[in-house]
Length: 181
View 1 (cartoon, one colour):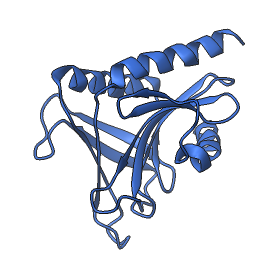
View 2 (spheres, rainbow, N blue to C red):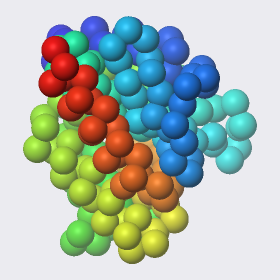
View 3 (tube, one colour):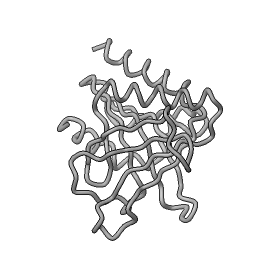
């Protein structure tokens, strides 16, 4: 976990700045995030506030061969004292289906992250399957502390269109850099 937090801190300040060398896959982008770090991410603006941006990112540190996934809600909307944060990933906004995911991610203060490779693969497979079905949205739900003064649940919506091609290229770029070292 410590390695991911370090790389997340390095990545966060530039995560909201569009990179000039980004590869685009519909609304997904593959961007260098500094020396040896690449991110494959989806940014969404809240319908209520065009400045409020949420982001889901697969991040690869090419030097350490480390891959992690981060989910960053709009600034100031996530407050949790829990070490582990339950996450529901759903195809439908209104109901949980048997094919949807329930995962436990780690709390990084203003974001949550996933380090376990098998759970990352489960998430990627889920997004690829939703894209193949033609789904236009995937919904991420995770709780805030009850006394945080924020809504009890965060809800982030992403579009899986373009994910599979971009994720394959991300994996290739990450693996090639790892093999060169």
